[in-house]
Image (cartoon, rainbow over all chains, first blue to last red; front, side):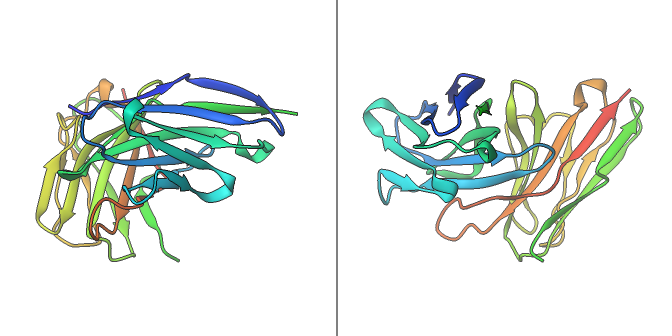
Length: 114
Length: 114
């Protein structure tokens, strides 16, 4: 079965510093990949998605992610953290032969310090 | 306004008392799904529906039922709730044209089973 691993349950970054959140998947066939953000007491919002069109995917709020097949990874980055980036981030995958089924990672809580 | 609504938002109940959490979307989406969110586990998919009258199990379907009689509604039924079903529940919907797409999440339902 497909699994998703997010390395690091908590990440603390300084305002203006690089944000790097790691996501690895287990499938031998590249799945569809997503990053979602959850602000306190809210549902999830899509940041970006990978569907095989391009390996570098740009999303909202200055985030981007790079798909690396050889590393089975889809890490999320933002060059310069802003206080408003404090939230929980989830990586999610869906198999190419089972669109409706999704697996989410355990999440990474991002804290931004002044 | 395009949205996914869930009711109730908060519910405290006792073991064994049947309950239903409603989910409705006004975006004419074919796909709908239910997730539960628990600390340290991320989101886990309970059931999903690719269209009216079509439902499938996610990773944690035990103890839950769903139905999809209309496109806009996807209720989650707990026939005999138990304390281990205490969780935060999210409903989501999506267009599924050509593959998995952005999911739009409801605000969540916090369920406590005593």
